[in-house]
Amino acid sequence: MKRILFFIVAVFLLGLVSANNDFVFTDWFEQKLDHFDYTNDATWKQRYHINQKYWEGEGPLIFYIGGEGPCTSRSVESGFVVEIAEELKGLVIALEHRFYGESQPFRHMTTENLKFLNSKQGLTDLAQFVSHIKKQIAINGYTPKVMVVGGSYPGAMASWFCSWYESSGLVDFCYSSSGVINAIEKFTTFDDLIISVTGEQCSTALRRISRLIDTKLEAKATNRAIKKRLLAEKLIDADIYYLVADAMIMGPQYSQKSALCNPINDAMSKHATDEELLTVFIRYLTETFYPNILHSTSAEYDRKYLLKTDTSKYATASRAWYWQKCTDLAYFQVYSEGDFRSPHLTVDWHLDKCKSVFGIETRPRVEETNAIFGGANPKHQRNTLYVNARDDPWQEASIDRSKVAGNAKISSIFITGDESGMYGHCIDLHASKSDDTEVLKQARRDILAKVKYYLGM
Image (cartoon, rainbow, N blue to C red; front, side):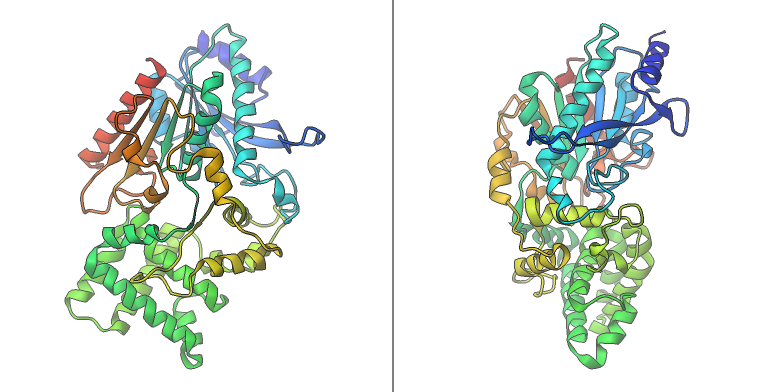
């Protein structure tokens, strides 16, 4: 009966329309354009999804935060968050972040319009939306428990949401997976972690490969040929430096270290030359990185593509995220001594790219962002769980775990794992699989126990 009652509420009060099945619905929420200018009455439509399959009228509301990409109905159909909902008989609700996916305040993502994109506006969007949903559910005479959850940048937003709104009663618990809460301009420790995870042999080979590619790019006689081998003939040299670095770090970052390092280590054991190592790396780049990790082509790294502003014709998520990096958060991954990354990749390289894309001088407001939210030591924090994993380089921008010990208000779970390379970015939020390691299974059991504890269930 309670499930039927919510269905009536969903259809007639929230105006939901069915997506892929009888339990998943998609609709649009009218959101203010600027939450901090009370003279601006402009609004826009923000997309959200609801999965009521497990909700029986008295379980928690579980808000999944959309981040730096489209947030489709799949976000409420599978994954560990949905498994939590099944266990707690909760209602899963995902809100797409402004300027991503179909949640576009403007048709054209011009530099002028992007001034309305930052983490503070995004957090306030979420607060307005959570308040709206709670009021609709409360019509039934029930005040539900509320948790918010996100991974990576949305993981940071989950942390910041508790800092801003937990004391007001809007939210009861926040779950931050790989939450990048500490804005960093010169992010050298990112690669330090990758070097540690890949091991001496693989990281040494990556340095040799990177230097050889730089050499070939710098020589007129070999520039065109190496670009062709990298399937990146349309890219300028500056963009290829970053493409190569990303190809080297994203496998380990996303729990696929073996796909990168196993063939490289095998070649190293046979005393491969630099040219032979390059051949192995290019095979990985074209057969694994592009199709299975990036799910795109080298065009993703073409700064000319970032100039596209028409959201009705182009996928503009990369432009939106780069704006947030250039103005708000940074996370600039740069070269440091002994790194495999090209020495060309400096803070100035990033700032030059920002200017070429947006046409103005920018500098990320990292000090301001960290002053507002607390950086690695979040302000006014209660009822928050931080989860990080062994192989994830983004842990270097997450919670200072030394500050969590002995703090009853917040918790931290670190997935230690082993040297298999299976413990990467946001791994805890993935859907459970039968062949998951026991370490990962136990981590999810521990997370679920924390969720129940903080929600009083």
